[in-house]
Length: 393
View 1 (cartoon, rainbow, N blue to C red):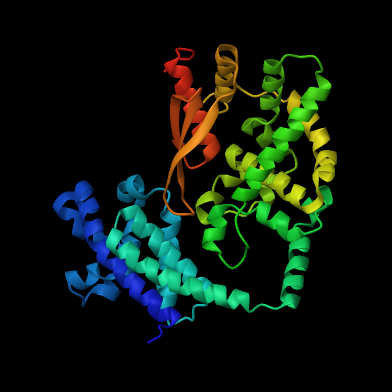
View 2: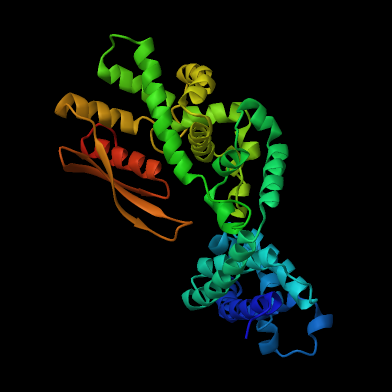
């Protein structure tokens, strides 16, 4: 029998309560010892719970979430940070569900996603998988609904995007606004809002990085005719560094337009890594939209600006020129550029982790692991420099 949205949410809240009850007791005991349950009672209304047994109280997901919220700083912040937003959201979901409010498919998917993420954080693998089954069922319904949308709705969608991104489109005149919207879409937003976008910006970021490398290379070649290859490489890498790109992105307030999930909203709009990645995605999207000449016309003043930017030495946890320095070493000692190879990927599509080796002449010099290929490459270069004794470990 087909489940209603409210029934799905109810079943998943029950799964959540099964996990939260022993989890809450374990963490509360660590702080309050045998007085932990008296602390639970202090967090709830006696009026609503005076006739309930202790067991019934600890099976109520509303009580469990409320206790976690009220004892956040003293008990749960260490274990669940930064998931407090999920806890508050699920309190609201539970209250709406208890009052028989109707949930749309979008609302249901978001609620199940929040439950799923909290279960993952707690480490409840069995319940997490059960909730994921419900999530996938709702996602299929959302995809079906989306496939039934008419061409007129698509046109209306284009117009809506144009209105939303008008200021940015005045700076970068895209013909297809959907491409710009996708370039601004972080994977966290796509995962939480699967029907509101056609995909995230990671492939466009890859394309934009290649376009930027090419144009930056041409720019420094023309400007510094006669310079040695190592010098040209150094100048190009400075132009395309994440830190320099982030500064330019901030100059035209790109963070304002980025589409981020809840977990990224807190600091994502000023996060240098996200800003630089998004700018590369916009470059890739504009190339697909209008071609290389249009990208060059837009980028040329930016390249000149990028060349003059001064990067603070402490602007990144890992030296921004780790790849540059290792590349210089490889060219001087082996007459070739390093090769960065992805040797494994792990995690789900929306939360991948990349393992990267850096090699010269098929010899492995370093390994790095991160949620972004570029960051993993930078870590691998940093390890290589440490092994060679060129930087302190």
